[in-house]
Length: 298
Image (tube, rainbow, N blue to C red; front, top):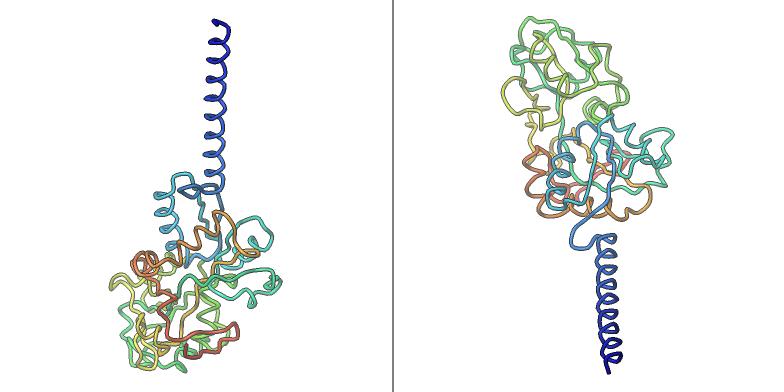
């Protein structure tokens, strides 16, 4: 009788242990598959114009998902496209279509248009010019017009501040602001923040910046052909200088990369964080563009 009770007790203990182990394995499986929160780690690189937005979104996403680790690097659109196509990062950010970058296997990449950014020429407040025709804009940046007095402004020599050839911001401005014409030599800086600083400190300076950098009156955004550089005018297709903010993946995204991109396209980000960071929601655009630059109504 004592033996029977002993064996019965051992049997019950064994069943409890097995049940606990099964429950433990089930929970581990949920964590590996995402469970109630995202987990794992990814690296995002590329466009410096996109970095503030993506970094802010990653910070909020990780706050909601403590098991997720998202590292956001800049480096330029060319770097982002090269690294994602090589597989060294999971998401590559770009201001330009992958098809526009030579040597990038665009057919292997999947485009996620997470936002739109407007850009315009930025001038030192003392130049005395706030609006410019597109033809004169091209003449300024190609060096044909060399003094602001030729445009009704102050008698000041024009100092050009450019971005390097690898910059997506430069590519966008050249394509849609200068109709593809090559800018003349000037100061070349890799960072939009540095470009803004030089324009502030240099009388007669002109460069180009995303709308998100016009946070005060330290630099003046130029209207083009009488159309103000505003989000609303970009959305309606009336202001010409804008670009998609692309997040590319090599093939369809999976795991944490997919969860983060879904978050970027969520209503929470598209109508909240994105606008707060100075970008335009891609979901609010009334027009669209293809890689050749053709703009059509949605």
